[in-house]
Image (cartoon, rainbow, N blue to C red; front, side, top):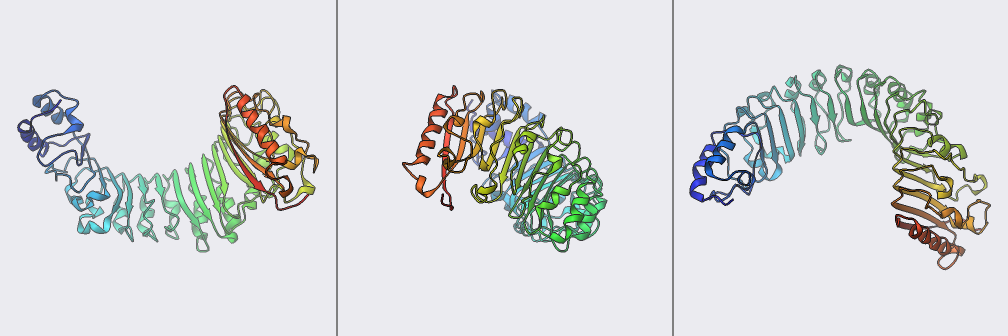
Amino acid sequence: MELAAGAMSPLLDKLGKLLVSELTLETRVRQDGKALHQVAGAVRDAKGLAKQLGELRQRLSVQNSTTRRATTSMSKVRSFTIFNPAVDSMPSLSQFQVLRVLDLEGCDLNKCGSHFKLKHVGNLSHLSNATCIRELPVEVGNLQFLQTLDLRGSSGIQQLPATITGLRNLMRLRLDWDTKLPKNGLRNLTSLEELTGLRVGHDSAAVVSELGQLTGLRLLTVRWEEAVLGEALVKSLGNLCKMQSLDVYVDGSRGELLREWAAPPPGLRRFLCRGPTSVMSTLPAWMKTSASLPCVTYLDVWVGRVMPEDLRALGTLPSLRGVRLRAAGRIDDDDEHHHPPAVVAAGAFPCARTCAFLHFATAPSMFPRGAMPRVQRLEFSFRAWDVAGGDGGGLGLEDLRMEHLPSLEEVHVELWYRKEDGAGGVAETVAAALRRASEEHPNRVGLRITKRISRRQA
């Protein structure tokens, strides 16, 4: 309903006196007071609007610097969100008396000047999304109620102050890769459940050692760059019995050391091992038994060689919903050790929704009727020369049929061919068979084929 400008003026004055719980000040609140679209749709007259405003309180968001500056008192505001275009209008933190959540959506705090003083917001429990700041004030250590510190995007912060190790209630610490933790004191963060952006470099020995004492950690992402600390890191990971999600980016160290992880946490749900040097020679033994990974829902691993039994083992994981298994190098790097395809059991991958098997020969026929009953997206690599019988791969065009996978919606095939098998040859015959198989599926499966040329000749 359209409200008259005359009726809106006193209401806007009232807005300056009342604190609101669900109010966003943005360009839709105009200086001439003609429209307050966010609220007006919920009321029929000026009296109803006044009642609405009287009942609302506590959360304030400022999105645009052209917004009419609110005269609202900040003393009762518990949650404050400000976006970068409005950072010039940010009120002093000294005006907030009960603030619990401060969300600085991409704000350049260099523009805030003396307004940004954490000593004024001692009750803060959530601080996030500040950018373009070179250092975190040491006063952050005084925020004893702080539970979430999210500094992702704050690439200017090279080092966290030592005072951060006194935040005994901190549960979530989210960093950029370039932000370093204090060299000592990580063990004091006894409430920590989530740590992302941990970088293990040459000067991280104490951090790696104390990491194993954070026994409440449930989520960890780490960039592993220092090979010398590999054994110490694996030892610390072994102490994290409550870990549910582990994401390791290996660049400079050896992913092979993760094969020595004696036993993963019983509640592990997500494991990713990626990066230039993350290759493990073969699939770790602890990844091959359902007893070791009863709860895991997602795996992403890179191995030197996929063995015939690996797919069978992964297919037994009862909770697995997504898997990405890659072989190192190109699919034809080691033809003399090429293993024949292994057919999994009929009940394999019972809960999986997405599966990717790359850089080793795979085909839908390896997953018989009854396997993968819920898979919607399938990625696999196929060697065109196997169809021609060039290397005894044991796969033919009939192996590309996919109608026995009932939930399939999307297929991506990495089709490898040799120069002599190029366009118009065996590669095109295989591509045509794939298109036919996708069209004959009851779901009319979407198909994407990526052709790659082998560097070896027959």
